[in-house]
Length: 127
Image 1 (tube, helix red, strand yellow):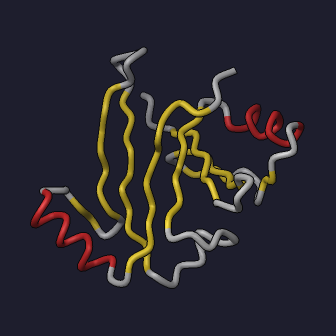
Image 2 (cartoon, helix red, strand yellow):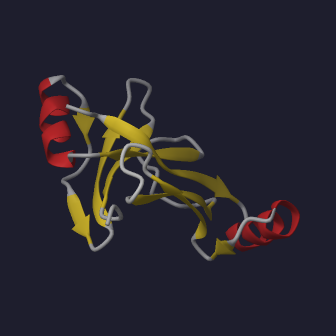
């Protein structure tokens, strides 16, 4: 079974997400929105499938990364989130919540041994 297949997103805290978005747009050419920037790519194993990686600044006071006290969170892409969560449970990995499903994909959060919150993401973008 495949586990992580790539990076789905890089999320980080900052004092002023709007200003950070503008700075990266102006100085580094990122095509930012209020949610950050989307980097689109083609799946190497199936070139007809599209994918993306998000870059997203969050407000300094966000609770989205909790219980981690870090200023960042990495989102990892996976192929079969339900099967992976079952394996991770058997391996003793801390699962923080239940799998949530949205139009664009499925999400669940886990903790690594140092308490870093990790977001697992099964995208619904491979069409």
